[in-house]
Image (tube, rainbow, N blue to C red; front, side, top):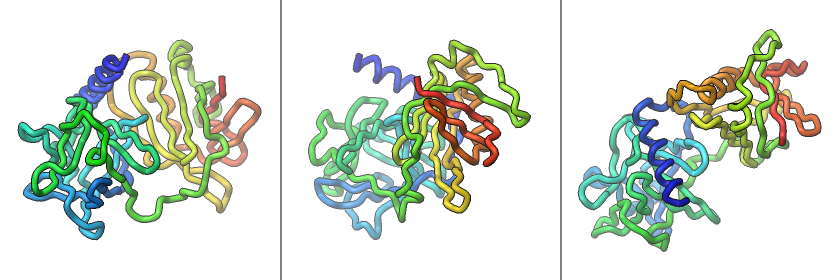
Length: 280
């Protein structure tokens, strides 16, 4: 089972490389700190090292691709952090697309994270050589493989927890005229719309991953969706069509209303639904 999950993740990352990624302009900025040494990461002679202070730490865009899948992007050049550089699988900036070497599984517990390369299955560790280089070389999850990934600046609307956080299914998608858009029933059964306590959401019907964040607007008790992006895998099937249909209305959502096991995401305060969800 573990081998199957790893193979599936690598296959998905390969598709991302082939078809590209739509990236939000305001993806979150983060720094990476070694738990073992307390040093922050920066680049030395082109390679990522853990040997500097917080004031000199390199700032990455953290790109969340759904679940525990992440990539780290240099905002100025648009290039992504990759493992597999040189025979020691060191870390450096690579290309402008996310392939398997740029794709990491990030697991965080108690504020401490591990990063595992989805290309070779190895954990990233610091402490390599005199400059404390980082490389995807380890089978362990000990001190040198542990990092703190810290947002730069105050996180927006961090205190707000969506009252509708939970696991949902898509019931209906409606156009601006209020008419129901036809959807494939089989695709609907396999689709999952998950909303998390920190406002993040993920949606997939089995082809692409749609991710973003709900933000509360105190002025009118409404909501906004930010950091919304979708992977661009062209599956040419009903799942693909459903994902694109849901994606097409997300930018129109302004309010949320709950009713028993239903969630109505509406275009206005009067309740004109764009997306209706239910809890099975």
